Length: 366
Image (cartoon, rainbow, N blue to C red; front, top):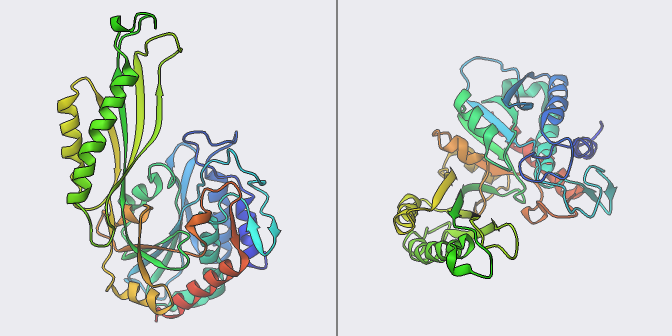
């Protein structure tokens, strides 16, 4: 490989679709991508290790040589998984170079930022040893569902600063919303649809639950409005229920995505819902909001390189490290508008700008 473009093409051609949900491939998972990165990083002079997080789904962790012990540890950490390829209008793993763009799943989110980071590290070579920080790299599995890789690494290792790779147009995301994925389940009683009064309609019950949740959420989000992140948001993503049109449904499940801000008391909101609907089943997974001090020395260094600080409405692996007290930000070339799209791409110009940006950032670590 002679360029970041070729590196990105190789990365795209390795399927690493997150297996949760409907991946759209028969061979999901991040292992092959992690193994490719291990070889590339080893050739760049790093000590590498695959650490399995879930069966067959490892993180790749690499440490570059350092001229002395005791330096603060700086981690570059994009994620290796991509979203589903179902419904894509281009070859998801083609890595085609056309119209000054590289096309394929992950081109923007987040193999483009990954390639820019890796190529900058490769170009820095032995100079990395003498920087002010000990340089680490991680390819994190499982970001697209659950943040499993970042949560595991944050438990295993301590870093002084983490730079997460995401397509941010080379702006430094120092704060973002958290995310809570709520699963609601209602149970009813099945009877023939010609006598619905004899049964209990679980779908209609779910409608009442969602309306009650939205009413309470409307009040809570206004009270918790954040001066930078704005208001929390709620989206009903899926509803599944019933078995047949002429049967009163005895079950219904709804999955809801709530993007949280620091002062939103979601636990109280769910407790009120439980009190109103005692038979309702509720389960939830949470990712906390991110806030890293924009006056942190390395955030300022990123800004000096052109990476102005901005908030974001989405969440990412940075939150896992921040939850452990580690300053973390997200930054990379490419636009979030291209993430998860049917014809995902990144401009060659933006990828090359990313390489220069990270190279400039490394040069400032003296």
